[in-house]
Length: 182
Image (tube, rainbow, N blue to C red; front, side, top):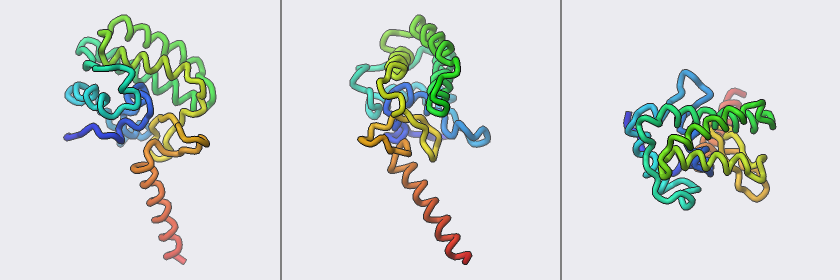
């Protein structure tokens, strides 16, 4: 399947969230797509992150994950998603911090210093220490994790141009359908 990394794919606000969001429709097993399942997508991700990621200035040039480190990188991605999703939904980590820290330590021990896996681990550490954890949210449309940087903390979608428009169009369609049924 042909796929292009676009700015929308980097709407999480942090490299670690953009990596976690590489699974499309994570909450729907029948339609879920792992963008890192194809090696060429994982190879191209650092180049796209250098262009679109909100944290691009923090890392400099980032190299792809070494092939032997990919299973650990995917394990870090999944632990990151579980931890932050749990923290957003329930306001606590439900003991998932220990698992995440283990994956971080393993990743940092094995990663090249300028690899995507090392940069992602550093991004995760910054997110754990984030001063306003209530700014992390889950998109109401696609289910991606994102940081709400709006002044009044009212952002509901990862990307207004994509998910916000889809939600508003869906709401308009349903309202119009109800009006026509009357």
